[in-house]
Image (cartoon, rainbow, N blue to C red; front, top):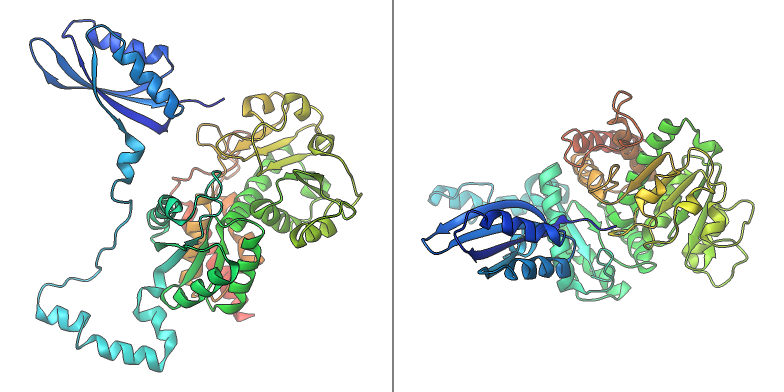
Length: 464
């Protein structure tokens, strides 16, 4: 199912004979092994040779090597250098700090630093709330991780998590103008994480928890929300839940169903799955069946943690037992945040007519989207190379923009649902169809609409 994409893009610099067929030979060689050429540039030319940069999308690191080998196997061709364009983007990191004020002379320095800055310090000491007005706190978020659940890669630790947190910070700035900074903690002890975040909190207007493994993430978030006077948002939980609830609202419009009449299967009951279930229940579905590696969650299953106990009490009203394939029979909606290749077209066929399939495991979903489309009315994934990409970047920049603008001290389910509704509403009736249930991540309307909804919901909560 993988297809060549920009995540494995390489540029190969080769020397080739200066023949009329050189370009065709090179492009054909890459194409024969499945490379998708996106650029072909002659960088130098001599009487006996040409030097060419060939940029290709590949499917994996191994596939990139296959492309390089195919080029080098051509008569008279020599590979000089292979550049991985993803690694090139990360050289030296992806973000930086820049000054917002000019420091051109002594006067500027006297106001920005000593002696003038002392008066600002005294003002904040007298009125701590002024920190939101007079410092970076008003527009800054900490992206906090312990590196225990990095993407779908597992426990890689804080240093290996840093590229993801940098990327997150870049997305905050790009889509919502929020200044975010990675905070990668060299501990996976719950108490140490809580204390570390509590100690750095004065600098920030919000905390975005990221890639912290369940069930530890639940306690960390809950206790930090109690301890801090700024919003704490675990994107793996709540960002995913916002996007899924928004996409589901529009998918149900496509198939003409009311959520109150639907049975929803949620596969994966970790951070994302649990949050999806909690927010989805606020919408009043007919029933929800939660499924993990041990099968359908029900109160009598035994050996379940506090999170699964809550899920068991609030879902599966008929106490259905069995595995994922059993849960799918007659289901209206499947939402997967679990593992790849768990079922196929035959199982989708057992779902109710007008079935909706959100297979969100990355990079390989729970079911091949092309197989799911044989029987499902609406199919979504987390991938960018299929329609209906459900991606957290649709939510978290706008959510924090709204929270910061409202100077919110916390975050509620009402705010999360407001964000979901705003996201869903961007896809109006004229554009809504089975292949377009959520807007593009590059739609400029997304972050402002989500921010406005969250800001209004925060204002209502504050006034109440």
